[in-house]
Length: 267
Image 1 (cartoon, rainbow, N blue to C red):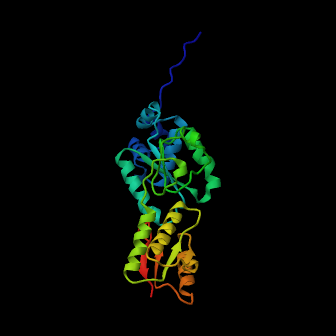
Image 2 (image 1 turned 135 degrees about the horizontal axis):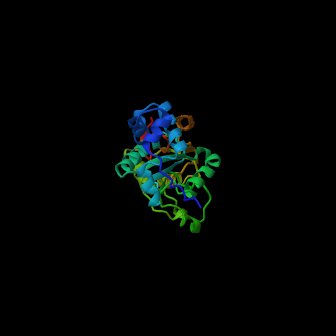
Image 3 (image 1 turned 45 degrees about the vertical axis):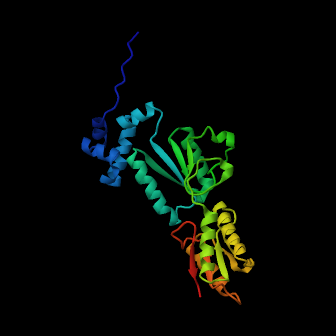
């Protein structure tokens, strides 16, 4: 019987020979990909796959059953509100040795299988939800078997997850109450989509502030938007076209840098 031939692990030099580059270039392409061209990075990654090279840091992580990667689920990557939030997540993650993957839920049906595959193959260590929904169906019991999750923007009590969020109801109440203190009685509201919990709480704050100040709720003074500039503009035009338009308004759309909305004198 012939003795089994010992399998020697591929090295960075093997990758360099295969890709026809220097070992320094291989190191940069795998560890600091922004320092090489996309073409070089692709060639090095392909060579690494072909020779079976596994960087030492990745090998250690696999032995510890860690990927050092976090998945951030974004409701819509095109919404400008999320850019600063994602930047803060990436900076903090990098300081702690983690990579960040961005999952856009704007096309949820197409992405659902991808998210599940990442979880099953243990390619992520945790998830941050910037919306109010999971990108796939999972019961409370099933959620306990998923990687650690935190809601980092909204609040959805039915998910029973740790949450970092603002008090949308109180913030909206304070904003509308401030307009009343300025002397406004006809206060409009540009609300967000009905199905979003944060929009529900903000509208509640608007209604409660009016009631607290003895102002009758006029449904004509409530217009709906969808967090886009275009929808916000159309809602504003709708309110200003009323026979007795609001003299000020509380807006929940993307015009606001503050997630709770903003207030303004309109007339």
